[in-house]
Amino acid sequence: MQTPAPRDTAKDAGAPAAAPSPLAPRRTRWLWLALAYTSLGTGIIAIFIPGIPTTEFILLSAWAAGKGSPRLQRWLENHPVFGAMIHNWRNGRVVARRAKISASLMMSLCLVIMLFTVRHRWIIVLAALGMAAGAMWMWSRPERVNDVQAGDGGAR
Image (cartoon, rainbow, N blue to C red; front, side, top):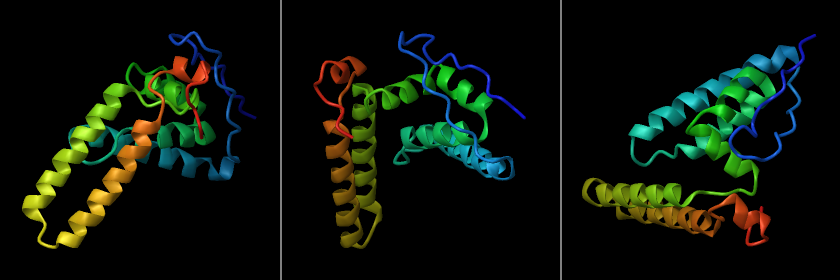
């Protein structure tokens, strides 16, 4: 029987460590691990390709790792870049202002590229509506964990 090692998620944040996720049964754990690594790989690739969201894939990877690999989950939580994303999301569904600006710029860039490359305008309209909905949701999120703790946001 394998027991998960304690986590050090509060290392830099000063917050209590997240409760350990229950591991999936041994026979299905490899599926969760495959999802975690696939999502992580996609998230890393998305850093370099405009229009593909990075944060969502990293969060999916951390969630799946919690069910398949405590070691991968600890690595993600303590990663200098990904750890902050995961901590912010788990502590109030927070999206940092830098991430909001970056995502908004990338969506705008993708829309401009679509205007010059896509012949069917209805596809552009659908994409623009999806991007607008995503941007409205994203900009409605609090920007700091302190905002959530003070009661300024955090609706789920």
